[in-house]
Image (tube, rainbow, N blue to C red; front, side, top):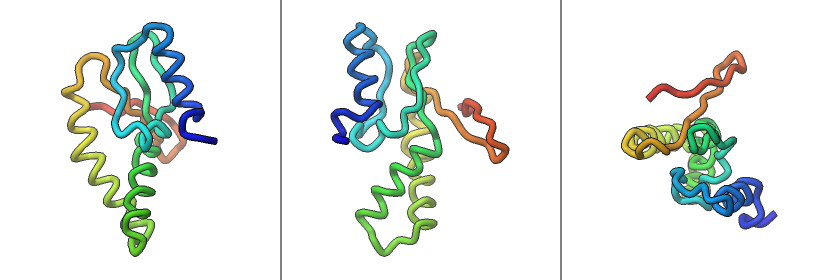
Length: 113
């Protein structure tokens, strides 16, 4: 499936066609749209999976540095997300993304920021 027709890209185009344009989309979209898991229509906010964000960046880091172990790539991705994404979400206004976290017991909850 091309990136253009991925389910999340189709969702984003649909939302924009309905005039819903005020929500924040994390960049680079070609990397991070795979981490979108939902849209909160009550708050006009995209919902991202924290774990999927880590996976997206870990894959990117691993592809650029093949010598990294999976664990090293995940550690670097986690550091990157904390320093460059989670910290910045607080400053993205009322339409900032919602970040969901899956707990070890399988429960999914919104991350408090």
